Length: 342
Image 1 (cartoon, rainbow, N blue to C red):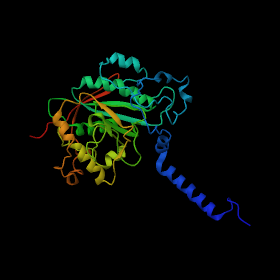
Image 2 (image 1 turned 45 degrees about the horizontal axis):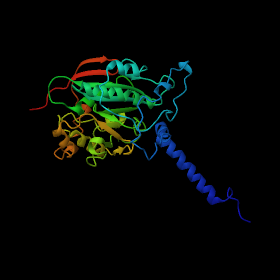
Image 3 (image 1 turned 30 degrees about the vertical axis):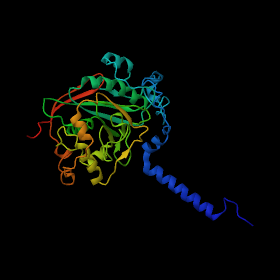
Image 4 (image 1 turned 90 degrees about the horizontal axis):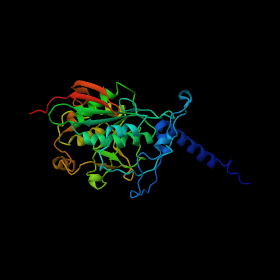
């Protein structure tokens, strides 16, 4: 007499193995992996049909009783996919404030209708790019709110006329941001890049640093070279400290991205990337600064990161904090990071 499927030893063994694998995935992935598993975007997206970044944002209204607020839904109910991004009109600060009534002083936001499941610090290196900043704030605030994140935008402003040092400013931003919160994710963001799809989640990968800007308009929506890690990236505080942060010694060369990619490999991690159909970004005024554009297209092979990464980074960071001020739409941190060596 044949055994029923439930009584069959082979079936029971396979079932036990499947259950063990499922439990292991949940255990290793943690809450954020489960969260991301519920927000899979469509694989085919039509970027000729876009929506305003403020579409349906008014549906998020303040809960009547904050003490009994539920956790936010695993998938935001107002995702639309491709977004309309234009730079024809420069928005005023008053316009941005009126459109984002729940943003608190310092660029801090907490969903008014639910408890956020994720905390992200947006860290932006900056100097004398006020028009870029207006567009950035106009688009990024609603973009982040659509994802129901708890977030704060930090602007790390380099004072003086010395050569710009993006990587060192990001180190400063990480150090200052971690004084405020135990952030789940550090989102390192150029001020001239705007995300084009609200399914591009501004959360970190559990295991490895994530390159978010995998398809920039400037590069015909492809990578300029395979190890590119520039533009927008997401790292947990643990990732960042494991690789000793970013190098402090690159002054306006663009080569820091290659050093960072090498650090990731040297400490046993790898770069994961947002899928190209989601990681699309538009850049403002990209026809300018052609010298730096050439650097972006050519990996820096002159640095020996293997010898320098342990001594050049967060453990060697020196700067002078000149001011910290909470503006209505962002927290401004002004620093003196010294001068480039002659």
